[in-house]
Length: 238
Image (tube, rainbow, N blue to C red; front, side):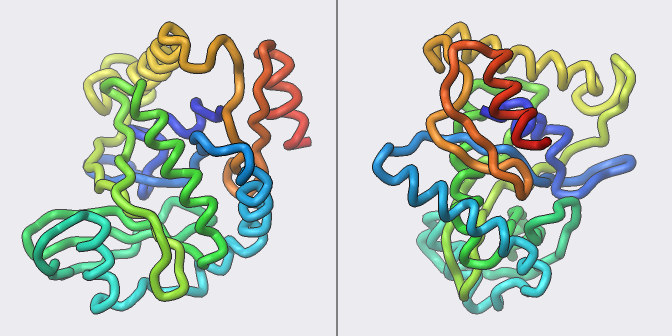
């Protein structure tokens, strides 16, 4: 569910919106991911409750380096301590705050944060990214979730830092040499690949509800695409 929105990661879900040259990635995405039925209501309620508190992200700073570096070490599964040398805020989203993190060895990461009550939103995003990555092919680039959890009263999502070129609106130019034409072709290929593999068994939707931006997103399964799109995508926005 919401694959089209969550997918155009390589060019559209940008960590900050580029005009020319390099950038990195992430705005707000629709999310998808498997779940167990008996926890559905709990997660559904938690996501909806977290939406009300999402703007609190703008009142928070990044957790201090002496707490963040050990958290990164744990999430990345590193043996030795990590030295965090730079924490640069990046823009692009309207719900969460985001930073570029740089380690002493030159590696860079993207970190998205919000209040602790927004953890279900970030968990759903991580699930969605993993599901989409299974079917995505170049030129689409999907940020890999490396860690998600709580630290110092904040919910955090750690992703790979993607260095991307601005995509042209014309065919044959821009990111990956294909511009937005390549994005459209890649998105179509993703849908085709998942359909051919029978990933959703001929159904439309997803196994759990989630959010699109700060709005609830209903993902109940339906065998009719037009009905699903009207009932679960258009009508909730009206």
